[in-house]
Length: 118
Image 1 (cartoon, one colour):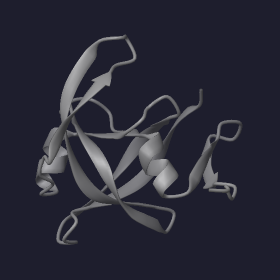
Image 2: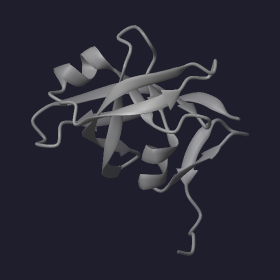
Image 3: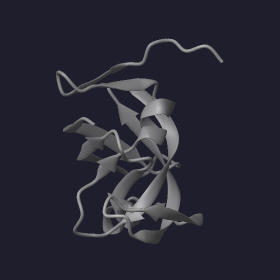
Image 4: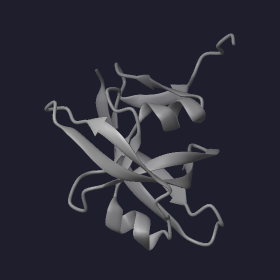
């Protein structure tokens, strides 16, 4: 499993609010998790709840919303999890796959994903 930081820009879906953060790229994380206070500042509203299992095995339930994620010029709407206010942001597989990016753990970077067949 590779773990490193990478910059990501998040925008509200209406494009009126934007923020840039450093997120921990964790190949074991399914979803992008952002501190809830930052998502509220971005005017992202919860649209549903999602059950997750933390790395220590604890089941938890968090709010999820939608934001536009941009990395290295690639941009998509994605699901974001309202995380703990004091926790680091995590960049998860759902967002990375949507952006067609893959993890290069040897060099600690994101790279364009190889073409896949449907």
